[in-house]
Length: 428
Image (cartoon, rainbow, N blue to C red):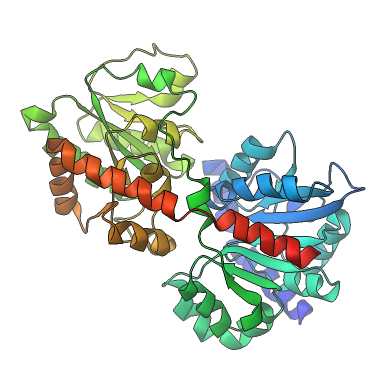
């Protein structure tokens, strides 16, 4: 079976290679970490036992923060290593853990590569964030009695029907997983329906509630704050995707036609760094002047730019700084079919938060927030304008939404402790 998988992987990689080359040349992606992707991985403390955590991209890496902190307390005789798939995920992991933990790119799931990675790491347990279960990794771990655990587990409404179509292929894979620690009962049932053992499924809640900091004060916001006049209100569109920036700019232009919103300033923070220049061009084409945060942050421009230009958040890892200064937040990738971005960050900080209906990657959080009137959901550009207008015109209404949202985040915290207890019990 593993040789058949290797054969399929080889031709899939061959078919995908033109896109890899294009992105490497044009977008400067996929340029690093190829030795690690081929299993050449080292540890800082090879004499210790090892916990391998894998997180795909930025969101999953962020969700590891409380887990890593608690593992260090409860299992200090283990070395923790962390892998990521994407360049942005790797960069975020390096920023969080690079000076302390071994951080590396996730190896390809070829049988020989996985064998090499396991021999170099010698993990005692593999912790996979959300749903990153690969066949050869799981098979090798099972053969060598290394438990594989899915943390913060979920299968989205979009993904579940697709998995059901290939259930005969998925069932042997899921049956090898030692534990599915799911965000909700619905997700737990989906894992079992696809072949996970019922005794291996547990509900721990979402780790994103625990990692969402409920403070408004974020270190390092001074330069961003200096870009605003004292009486200006900041409307932040964070984690946006293709097609959304034009909607945001149209809404903002309409808002600015109202004299009452003369002091409202817009900041757009795209999700993907390769889109920064594209969005910069779009801002100019829409008739606005632009201030690039990267230029101010690095000191290449006066940090006291106090005009009505649209601020482009073209740096990585600074979204929470923008949220901390916001009067109103729109969470992106939600008016286009991309599954949404993390709305817990903004709501935890007590910000009035709006998002679209395309949020299948955050269903549990969305349901909890909407049930308690802790956020606002909109279907289109017109509704976004109506709600932004209402929130900016009626601060009491916006403040109530914000307070409810923060309360929902606090009430749903506790997944970290349940998750750590399950891991410790399994190891011991």
